[in-house]
Image (tube, rainbow, N blue to C red):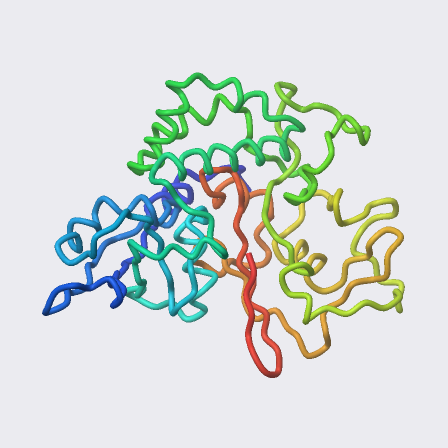
Length: 329
């Protein structure tokens, strides 16, 4: 299978979600209240980037005060630094179209949500995520740190405007891909230590990167569906000497199904009890970029073609139990 598919990448960049955005009733000062506004939100974009479209629609009814814009879905404050498509995939197991969100210009919930000061906040959050991905993939983030201000601005503006070709032209200089069949999976938590400190080489500029950057923390985010017990059988998902955890890595040329069977069902931790899902828990669905993929697709292909512009692959897993359904990113 080819490493990269421009058609698949184009699908990611053109993905959008119809949004119906309501102003929170506590901020309505006129009668009749303003109708909701319908906008199309880019899946790879961020909710605060829609504020210039949204505010003029509601400005005549807002109460006096300083804007501190935030969004919620059914009362849940939404993290503005997570791509819109990922939020939608996480919160809508059954796709809701249009997706009904509520916008607030006052009363920011600072105890549960980091404030967003506008587009600059989103831009620097994106750049920091890009640095993190570069560190995971290459062992350092020199290429991102050494970008000129002009290149940083062009990269960001390409994302904001949905200019895929402009983005690819700049991002190709960062040497973060494509990833090959010999790649291994490495989670975001792996960036806790410098790679050289644990005996791994610096891959920057030495050929194709061989680590994947993806975000997941199943045991941390869903502790109630896990329990610990000693290893009870001799079935191993990792080769001898390989471990999963703060320094996670998997075997070569894995499929989506293979990676996630290891991740979600049974993972031996070096020097720790085996972690398993409760027998009543079950993975009901895995969604990436809004689609449920064939589980036999090689994982390196998924990362190369379905990752977000900050070079993270966001995998949404829906866990079903006998009583409820949970999700995680």
